[in-house]
Image 1 (cartoon, rainbow, N blue to C red):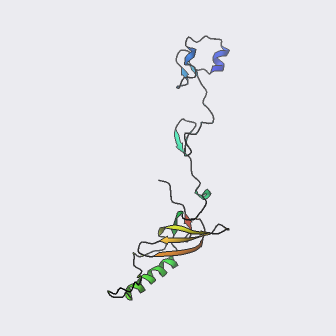
Image 2: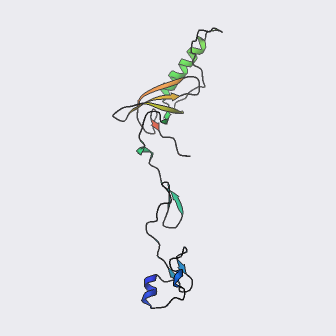
Image 3: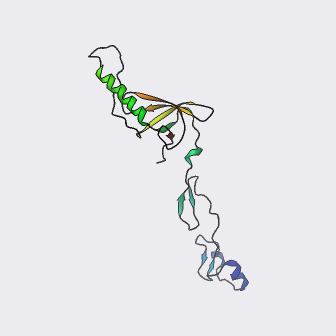
Length: 163
């Protein structure tokens, strides 16, 4: 196969020059092939065509997301807070009022363990990048997490993965 420049350098005449630049970038009559584009255009914001012609997905840098009120994040529960939540629920269970209509809220829900991940709403964004969260537990109560930063450690929040 020869490139256009090599083809023109040999001063050959192609019987079908209209095929040059076709979608296949190849002319079967003179073996002309268009050189590959070194920077393929993006297919969309998330997709691009790599140098081999395959469609790929851009890696999304989640740390570039900006926290704002009402956004949902994932909170990784530290062990000491999990124990406190479980203790609160056990205390509520032991002191549960009978069939009264007092309007008392009793904390009930499944056990929480350190490392469990829960969805959380951002309820305050501080100037230094910290956020306050209302963590949605697996029960009828929530947990207020204050001055939380983004990260992978216990007590940090992360952005939900794209699905």
